[in-house]
Image 1 (cartoon, rainbow, N blue to C red):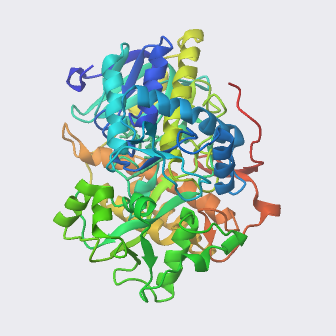
Image 2: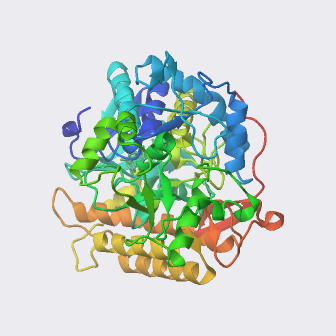
Image 3: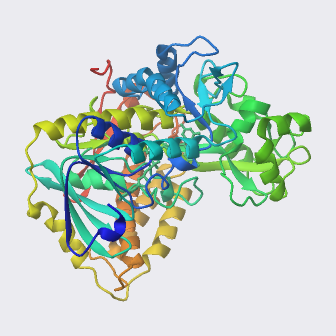
Amino acid sequence: MPSSELTDATHLETDVLVIGAGGAGMYAALEAARGGASVILADRSLIGRGGATVMAQMTVAAALGEQTPDHWEHHLADTLNAGRGLCDERLAALLCEDGPHRLREMDAWKVGWAREDGHIKQAQAPGHDRPRCAYVDFLSTGPAVSKTLRTQLNNASGIRRIGDLVIVDIAVRDNEACGATAWHLTTGQAVTIAARAVIIATGGLTGLYRRNSASSNMGGDGYALALRAGAELIDMEFVQFFPIGHLAPRLVGMDPIMWDPFRYKLGGKLLNAEMREFEDDYAARDGRSDGTYVLTRDLATYAITKEVEAGRGSPAGGAYLSFRHVPEADIRAAFGPVVDRLLENGIDLAQRAVEVAPIAHYHMGGIRVDDRMQTGVPGLYACGEAVGGANGANRLSGNAITEAFVFGARAGREAALRAKAATAAWSPGAARPALDLLRSASKRDAPNPAAMVVKLQAVMADDVGPFRTDAKLRSAIASIAQLKADIGDTPISSATAFDPVLVDWLDLRNMLQVAQSVAVPALARTESRGAHQRDDHLGLDDAAWRVNQIVTLADGGISLRKVEPTTGKAAS
Ligand SMILES: Cc1cc2nc3c(=O)[nH]c(=O)nc-3n(C[C@H](O)[C@H](O)[C@H](O)COP(=O)(O)OP(=O)(O)OC[C@H]3O[C@@H](n4cnc5c(N)ncnc54)[C@H](O)[C@@H]3O)c2cc1C
């Protein structure tokens, strides 16, 4: 249904509602339709063009073994190793075992994986024990993946695509998910959707941070939707910082995290202000030594931050990344059109090093699901980056897009099965709280929510960033509580049909709830593990902390408990 067909007080019905149309949501919609369900695929942006998937330029990890022998169990071993003891082994095994099938399916759908001698080419990425990462040249992986899935959606029947639709809350009746309440951005109307199964595929939360690689839609909506519906979150303290995000000189219209593939292909050198390579100095932290350019993201982030703190940073406050040792012809052969776009930005890699620094990039934590992708709330599923557990405390390069495909497909299949079996649980009362909230919005003198989002991003970057302390985390929790009090419980409205102030308020409400869900378990975890590094608690504490922390909502506040990591294999 085109967005323009939505009218006042619109009510829609479907078997499966998929929230979010990135890689995970599009795959879920396709698979649910293949399972015979009618599907609504809703996104607050354009279908297949919001979120992270379309922005990803690099690699997708799977044990295809086309050029180098491989097996999914080797991929699993690397994933579990990177996860530092916290992976949900069932989810990690699912990701690694099903990954090759999904990549081959995408290949059959003509995604255009780069090839050599007729075989899909696979690059070596940090933390993987062999070349395992497929890609689409030149730095086109995400756009190619999104376009391929959009084309499949065009060819599928039974899937209604609705863009510009912000899901505000999941509708729950008798503790089961039965649909959702939404706000249509272009008409400024509330929409209710009855569904037999609901899938959250809203991506991650890195928009909470000042410097991030995210699109504007990545404020963590899905986590807040799940919490308020009664579901659990897991591993929320583990936010991955991408170590070599572009910092300087100014770069316009290009992905700030594109330097990894340059390093895979050309072996760029990371240098401090003394023009000395320093990564090896940090490789043994936590007793781990990972060798040459296989330093995982958490360690590389640590290394750069510590060099800057020691006064050995680059002028803009990061490290230098240099390709000056690589012959110009090799740079051009590897990245032809990208080299020209860099030159338009005044960057000549053969002549000059760029500056890079850590940037918030991915979230390992998220909604807790079982091996059928169902949350603790019957009828509510989740997939993609919105799910926590598969990657534990740290994610390997390339695992996120595979996770989006694999978990998306599984969630779609399972939701379709439920839709066939379940009777409709919808009642208008299930949407009432969210509708009442929207209707209570008023024009009034209040702090500007967009400005408060910027404040929150500063708090998260300064106090809940890659390196944390008790004092910083307590200060962040207090600041978040103050911001919560400042926005109040009643939405602010600009009282226009297209109501950006209301949408900012709704976003901020979610962001504050999610920020709290990160900061509170981060304060509790008094050790350093993977992406959670405490300057006041160095090193792993396996005796006390080889556990996952579960976040739920209780009496409007965050409640925490510990569980043992899940072992075993998923049911197929
Ligand atoms: C710049 C960048 C580069 C990356 N490169 C790689 C890479 O090379 N390899 C790799 O494995 N991973 C990479 N990642 C990570 C990977 O891209 C993501 O983890 C993955 O694509 C997430 O897919 P997803 O479908 O779960 O979420 P997304 O693709 O983020 O899609 C989520 C969708 O949900 C929508 N949405 C959010 N909230 C709502 C709401 N309330 N109502 C309706 N819709 C909503 C958003 O608009 C968006 O379209 C990269 C990430 C970024 C940001």
